[in-house]
Image (cartoon, rainbow, N blue to C red; front, side):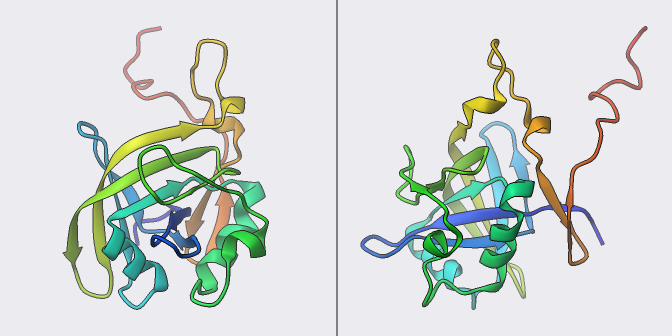
Length: 177
């Protein structure tokens, strides 16, 4: 009952095969230094085998404009379908891993698996973030990231929601006025 959670599209690819996308809601930050994330996937999912074999994936943040694609990529299998083509998404080469990133995503995290924890219904892939790609539309003149302008979405109990208004900055409760 820990909700809402991010709804991210994870791209992966075996050498010589078409790229695939799986939507994952069980994803999160694990560590700052080194930068690490986790994603949890059921072993029977098509992408699970790809990520387990290659040890690489890209976490692509989702937006209101990508909500339909995120849902589609979560309910359709890539075994017999090219999800990039079906959703009109652009597979762009990554700099640090062989898996492509989704160009339409505002932020892409290129990841290499460091450990797989077989926890039960889902296996958790712990991964080091090797590179971060940011759509320059969300950077200001001083290179500060403004993801609040990207229209990010989250997932909660079978529903997608866009993020709401800013309630305060970290530490606002103790800041002197």
